[in-house]
Length: 167
Ligand code: HEM
Image (tube, rainbow, N blue to C red; front, side):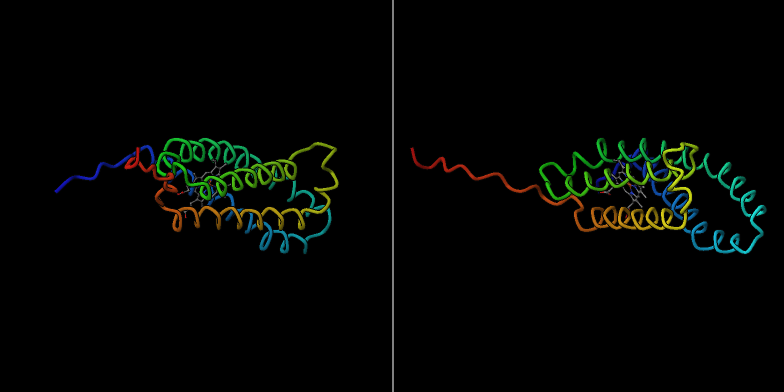
């Protein structure tokens, strides 16, 4: 019986990618739906202090997570998946959409934890923007899951057959 070769780099890239999604999206859901409502019960100065402390630590997760997403995501896409999906327009269109949405998520997440005055208005309404990020992340995960399960190694659209039987 032929032995199946395991691509350990692909396994590692997938582990890093899905692990990063679990930690970051899970952390964000916790903040939006558990920590923020609980912290809203605190006095104003205690609330502000807690917010500063949480952001100072969470920042490292966001920056590291974006780097891991990009490295593992592009490796997974360009090296592992692209050769298996040659000519599959739907797959590549979905991946392009996913990458654009991911860039929007990275931008919004960085703006929320940053200090730039340009995004002070956003930081004044964290509930709304955290909700937007969680919703976009849910859409990104849905696209990824669909691509993985429904478009797994689909045969490429067949090229038009050339009839060589007539001179
Ligand atoms: C917010 C950012 C992102 C999230 C939450 C995310 C989440 C995920 C998850 C959960 C999967 C696994 C799907 C499954 O096994 O069912 C996945 C797969 C994948 N992701 Fe991401 N991802 C993000 C960003 C990126 C980026 C920037 C790229 C860059 C190209 C990328 C490329 C891929 C690829 C190629 C797959 C494999 C799809 C397949 O199996 O056909 N992802 N992603």
